[in-house]
Each structure stands twice: as structure tokens, then as C-alpha cells.
Image: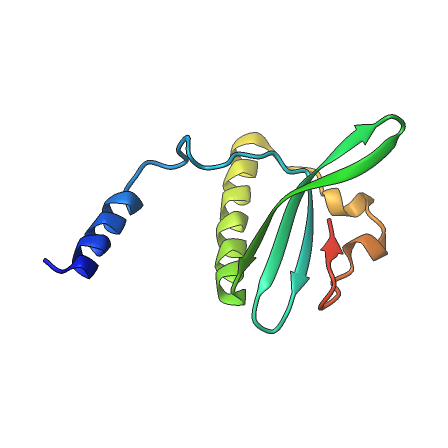
Length: 113
């Protein structure tokens, strides 16, 4: 067995590990920013925290993916949300309470939700 084949088999074994696992970072997000380019879509996840009387977002992770992968994620999330709502009832539309500027899709610089 070549070194490349050995590494490939090792990777396949790791790919079959349970997930999520204790090595993966876990975070809570109640805010996100989106940025799109011709080549990718970036989603930055964060948590809105209150410090004194002020609110600020602590950004935690930035996920970059191809538009095709983002579209697949959109379809999968949509199906999961539909199943959730069938079981537990309709979720409120969080975007309905936001201003037009907060939800406007702007190519390039980030859009915040």
C-alpha cells in the first residue's frame, strides 16, 4: 500500500466518525452576516450580547462555501424547518420585524440578519 493510499484510508475512517463529536467547536448564534461574491457565499455567525446598556455582536465563525453548496444548504434547511413546523407549529417570521435596510440583499459587503 502506498503512502497516499494509506492516508486516503485513514481519512475515510475519520470521515465515518460520529458527529458532532467533542473535538468540534460548538457555538450558539443568534446573529449572522452574509457576503456574496461571484465565487462564494460567506456566512459569519455571532451572538448578540448585552454589555451594560449596550448591545454588541461577538462574531465567532465565518463559513465560506460555493453558491451551489449554499443552495443545497438552503433546500435542506427549508425541508427541516417545514418538518419542525409540522410537528411543533409555525415559527414566527423574524424578518417581519426588521427594517428594509437590515434585510436588503447587497452583493459584496455583508448583509446582516
